[in-house]
Image (cartoon, rainbow, N blue to C red):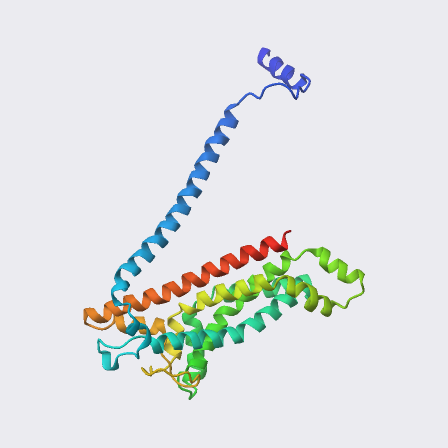
Length: 306
């Protein structure tokens, strides 16, 4: 009874905002949990950075010996020779990724504009779900689907068919990234356009889209970095590789990921070293592309939030 009376007196005591705070057992427990979670989050971030550093260091260490002007400018070796370079693979990767970007970028932007500006909520949610599912689809399945539909159907592998697979991979990335950027555009711009009596399509093309252009380009750059490193679709769809440099989109073409795979399968150590060199070139391209995309996205967000 005495303890109950004391607790009741504490509840009935008037609130004093100037009274000092007294730490209870519950508060100490929350602080300990907070410190543990913060430490776990920092440790996870350090692990992620450490893994990236270890991978970059290992690739640079093994691939630096193979890098030279001839390695970057000469044709691929014939019949698995140790001479030559990866110039056709560099040009082929650039061609395939460029065609995939040309196909995926307009469609992805249009999808994002429809979902963000025009679609009813239910349809917009369904489209977002479809894009997320497509984004999680294994790239090997995409390559197998196109192989069964096009290669088995009588066509031969080519840069164009390989770019179709990369375009499918890039499409959800561009669409979802563009949606997020469009959502950052202040609603005051839309309201101002409506107040002036501007048609919806004109406000989208003349106000909203230009405001989000930097973020759209950033999403595209990040998608390019993702597509440039894909190997499985290119193994099935790029065709029997022509070791000579060419830019014909309807002929088999060499790419850096496929070249890395072929060089790493050679029985001699020189081919493995050249595979490390090609991997270093591809890794630097992806890293530079990703960093450029992140910087552009941060700059675009800072402009939109001002």
